[in-house]
Each structure stands twice: as C-alpha cells, then as structure tokens.
Image 1 (cartoon, rainbow, N blue to C red):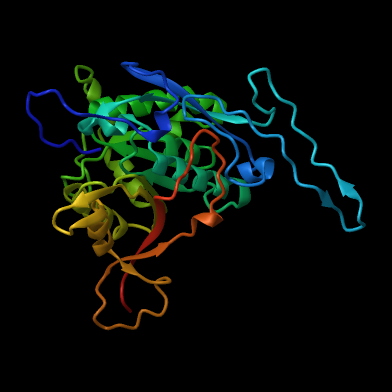
Image 2: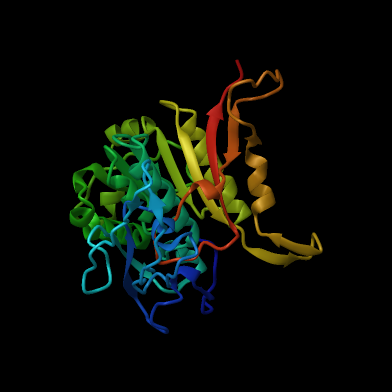
Length: 345
C-alpha cells in the first residue's frame, strides 16, 4: 500500500471489521486462522448467513443440513464430517495470517480487509470448481498481507506478491513461510517483490546486497519477463484514494498492455461518507474509479472507431461467488470487477 504524507503528530488509527473479534488494545502483529473447506458455507448452513465470527475467532459451523433424494427417490444422507477437538471438520484447510489489528493510514496493508476475503473466496471457488487458475503465473498487486496470493499459490505455477514498504513486504514473506506447508505450495515459486506504483512499469532491476535486508524484494530482469507473462492479476481493496487510484491504474495499464493477454480481478469495499461537494453521502473514490474503464460485455463487438486502447470492465454478480471462509461477514458494500485490456480492430 502506498504511504501518504504526515507530520510528527500521533497518527489516526483505523481498524478493519474483519478484526472485531481480536483482543482489544493488542499491539504488534497478531496471528489469525481463517478456515475453509472444499464446499462453500451454504452447503453446511443452508446459505451464506450461517453463524461465523470475526477473523480472530474460530467459527462454529452450524449443523443444519438439506434433505435430498436420489433419482430413485431414496434418501441421500449428507453425512456430517468428523470434527476435531477445536471444532474444525476433518476436511478443513487453514490460512494463517500475521497482521496488525489496528494501523495508521500509512500501514493499512498490515491489516486484513473484507475485500481481500471476498477475492480469496473467488480464488478458492475457482480452484475447487474448475482448472481455470491451475498452473498459471499470477500477480497480486497491492497485496497487503498477501492473503489472496497465498490462496492462489495452492494451484498456481508461480505467484508474484507485490506491495510497497519493507514492513508490508516483511509481513507478506512471513505469511508465505507460515502457510507453505499447510497449503502445500513450494516457496521457491512465490516471489514477494516491491512494486511502487509511483514508478513506471517495469520496476527497476536490482541486485541482492547482504548489508541491505530489503534488497531481497528487488526484481531480477528474468522475473520482470516472467511477470509480463502472467495471465492472472489480482487486487483487493486498492481503491480508497483518488491519488492512489491514478497510480494504480497507470501501473495496471502498463502491465496489461505488455506481454501476454491478462485479466485483472479487483474487489473493493465502498466506504460511505458525507461529501460537501456533492451534499450527499457518497462512496469515497468510487466515482473516480469508474472513470478508468469502459463497461462492456467483453472485447467482442467493439465496433466504435473512436474507441482507444484501454480497459474494459464487467461487474461480477457476487451471488455467483459462494463464501468459503467462515470468519467474516460480507455485508452489502463489496463489489467485484473483471477487467481486460482491449484494442480496437
């Protein structure tokens, strides 16, 4: 996440709703365990409104099951999964994430946000129901804790987890180490790299310097080539400041116009405040966000001669993205977009 300006006064602290179950007044980094299985919550709870708590508490799954019959009219028993002593089912997977419970606006990337949980649900859904994301090279942009990239690492050939700032990147790398054995991915295929949106793509090439620990996040020339071959880009909760939105889309356009064809899946949370300019309650930065792409059904059929190369977006119906992770409530203010880079014929 990009850092804003600031003086010497104590910085305002913000907290994600995902962390409401965490210990109050806890300072430093905290470990949360987010649980999911190969079936969405609605399979166990009859819908996505099943009981679950905040991200720092283990949720107790409900015990309601639907009654079903087979083609011959016989009762089909959906047998309950055996549970472990901590309440988890035997087929549960766990994502362990180190994060801050609160942070300054400059360090919001140390927290887990609801839009990242939604995008993680989407990645998990793809991995459980199709092979579309299997074996791809992927990049998470503005990764924060790296949650989405870790979920994709389960099935990807290679993942670049990118953000800015040594504290954010150190935390991403720690989360890679925490999850490689449980999620069964090879750490050698996960690259945590600094991507500063204030500089043009490609990022500068650097060399490792033993006297500078942060040099491990510099790019090699070969890695830039590999990143430009990425077919899948992922970004969660990067839309909250007009200035950062400008920088983000500048980076995205440069990246998506190079190398192979790419698709970007982006999730955001609309945060509403009263605007003196609009004299109304508006979602900060949302109107500006929508100016960066045309809304179409896809690249096909764009016969407008005035159309210039650029981004084309399609909003994804969240009803088609089941919830897998138990420890959060989606609410009504999340959106998901699929963006591609198109050129007129």
